[in-house]
Amino acid sequence: MYPEQPLPEALERLSSRRSVKAIDLQEPGPDAPALDAILDAALRVPDHGKLGPWRLVTFSGPARAEFGRILATRWQALNAHANDAQVLFEQNRLLRAPVVVAVISARQPDHKIPEWEQILSAGAVCQNLLIAANLAGFAAQWLTEWYAYDAYIQSLFDVGESEDIAGFIYIGSAASKPSERPRPENQSRIQRWQQR
Image 1 (cartoon, rainbow, N blue to C red):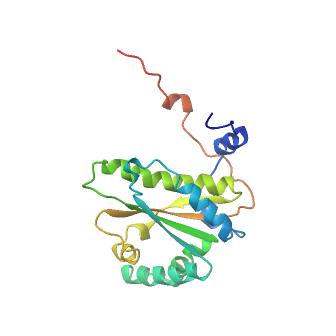
Image 2: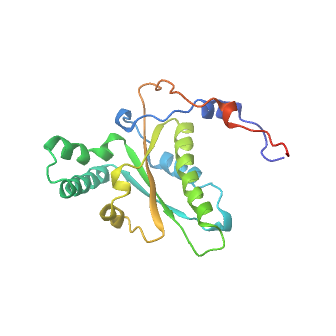
Image 3: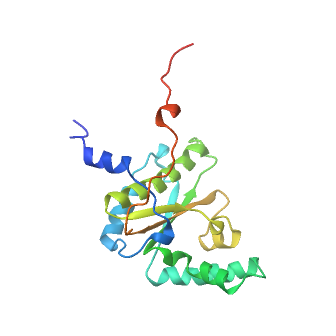
């Protein structure tokens, strides 16, 4: 039988999973083996046609500050009247979490697999990163923010014509679980099929 057994604890964890704001993340983050396990789990997504329509870029250690300096410089170029506090915030963006993973949707638009399904696959990678981080004992948040859409920043990731940055996943630890937020009532979003 597959799967061999249910995992009620995993279902319970998933049912109570919350994103933790990047600004509230702290050390420790996943070490290299833990991050590899999270990334491996993240890539176990539906992928019609076995295209792998995504790629990942990880930031940890000094790479976060190096990228932050690039963000600060770009922010200044886009906002001539930016004050020192704004520039410092941009410089420290990736320092909000011990590990940051950029997920890039890398589609093949002329393939028989619809482009929409390829985009969904990249979104599934983002969600799997959140779930895998949580199951590995870490907190995470999926953000895009301005730099995901900026042409110059995209060029640093070699984002091509049929690519987009699906998001940046911030991973670390949280001092406490955030309070629950309002959510749609589940049953109001679920229908049972009935032929008319």
